Image 1 (tube, rainbow, N blue to C red):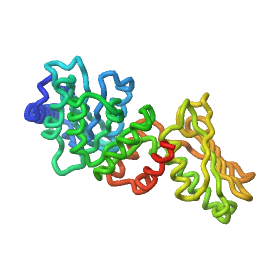
Image 2 (cartoon, one colour; image 1 turned 90 degrees about the vertical axis):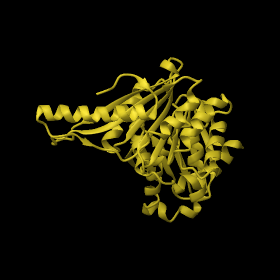
Image 3 (cartoon, rainbow, N blue to C red; image 1 turned 180 degrees about the vertical axis):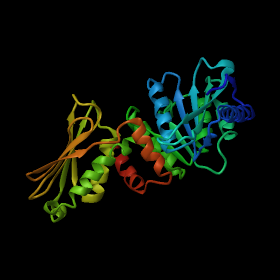
Image 4 (tube, rainbow, N blue to C red; image 1 turned 135 degrees about the vertical axis):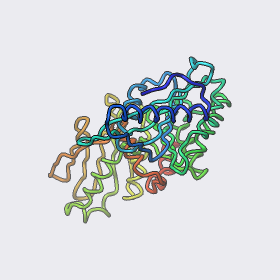
Length: 337
């Protein structure tokens, strides 16, 4: 159920939300069905551009996330076609859990603003976040991780970010040096920041950590002095630098990078060498990795690469990621060398 386009004013949006819930309850009463259950654990704000090529994917991701992290979702879109410069629409997303009669419903608010009104989105969002619950900002705007841009646009985004319990970004397609500098600045202000490039490494780090529990490897840790990270694409990704910093922290190993330009951007392999046994982890398709320890080989699942899987993991823990915080500066220094 969705409302008509309305001015993006907090009082109008909240009034429209109340109307949507009243309408849903009345519809359920007339049909003699159990009433809907209203669910909300946080305010999830998604800041996007009008030309976001994955707009449909983002919409689908939000729908899936509501099932595991019910939220008041607020989509902020910078759009030159925004009516009246600043407009909004209210939705109710509902579904029935398997085997249940009641519907679970969450709220979604879409706000469009042109560049002249973008500075007004901060006060608007302040008036519609759910009181006393966490606020997560998934920042997808291209300019957010780049130097420059109009002061009006920067100030508008900053007003939104200042409300955040946690900020989630993705440096995969951003200018890397600038992006890491922006994250550094945010972290210096004691903000909780997550990079989905780090989240993509979760299955890799888990597989490597489990490998070091194997008897063949357990006694060789002190002799593991070098590691090679294979990456795809035209340049070293943030994920590859994060992996290098993480390995250096745990193993004190010398790191080298190996490029495979024909592969997609990101980490595709990690080879850790010791005097007696090597640990070799390599991607084998989209959902699988091959782990080789000496002469022994096994298949390992490579899950967690879709937008839904990445965001589901990040929304599970809203506090600081101590491991990411501990390796971030080292990764940034590696990138600057």
